[in-house]
Length: 508
Image 1 (cartoon, one colour):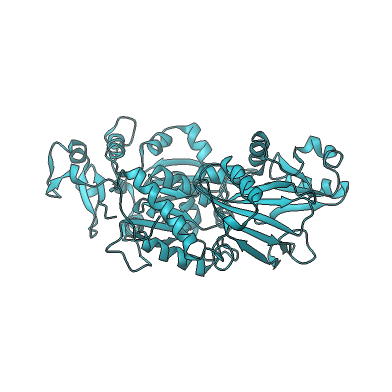
Image 2 (cartoon, helix red, strand yellow; image 1 turned 180 degrees about the vertical axis):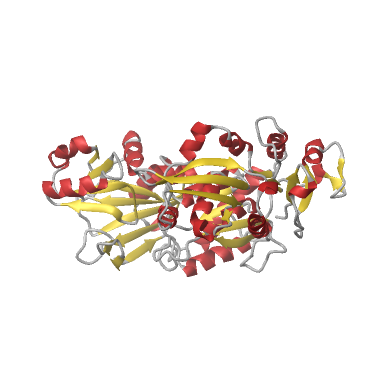
């Protein structure tokens, strides 16, 4: 969907560059709209469509200052402002900034530690730093505080690196090298999305698919991604693959499909939160990521909904001696953020419980312990928008208690086989418990893992956001229809949000 690209400044010299397709407007003229014409554009600002990207470079960003009102009215007009009002308020609140400055991610910490310093300063424009050493740090700063021009002090404490100070800067305050870097960042920010489906001219909406090309175990393989793109085209989407480096481009899209392994303390969660704040339709949404990624939350939510699970205990350092007595042996211990069998361990003795649990408790004050349920396979019910899409049966890897085996570093060694069912051909009880478990999380895209006891009783092991969708596995029975259902969900949510109705070429 075509949208405007707008830079708002207090003085003309605050934007020293000329970029094709980018309109530059003085802040006072933007605020005066729609009651007056804007000379630089030759049209009323009220004509700018919803979704217009507004880069607010006002010098005064304090509460009730001119920059504050630019972002406030942008929100009221359906425009997407960087920074938005919430970010402007955050920049003035030292308590919030302390929270936003909490421990950095591993990539940023690695590059900072390599400097040999204990304290560093950086200036970043739209997530890019003039000093190439701080590439990851600048990107993470922008994800946490999405304002165009920022200055930050990063310091090491006993736990790691964190942002000690964060403040807004004006372009006029930048040095010449910093301004050159800012121009490169601005061109990247405003560049047109690189469509991959060849139907950009007729596309009604822009879909971003977040992927990690370096991930050896992505949620969707290349063939599945190609099928997603094809289905998107059939439903009127122009598709662009983005990576963690494209955070600044989120506002250019209408929808975000996360096809990268998610985590709460991770850029995928920040992408989901920012996209949702910008009005994009997001699968999976940040609430689903948060709920599914924390097994402590999940265990309590399933218990409260009275959905059968293996015997479960929330464990802290003071309750280790109760695990074996309560659950028996062997027992499964899970890190709260475990995923794809990573962070999940089986203990066959009380000594193993103590060793594994103490290692997991170094990272979290609570972990999950579950009674071990031996089975030849796990059921999985794929659910979207409260509707079952497919049912798979994943068999355990040969000679192992899990679907996959891994080495000591967590690398995949072997994976069990699988078979896939149409929903109507799967055991009704499996589908029913899968739908009920998914409903405790939300209306996103989930994979509900279920074990079948020798008695025939079904128990839910966990609910996963961002489940695997791979060619010839999850789509083995539905084929292209699986992807059409997913893309029709994006389309339906966008139409509902925008208050429009458009007939797609695929029957929904």
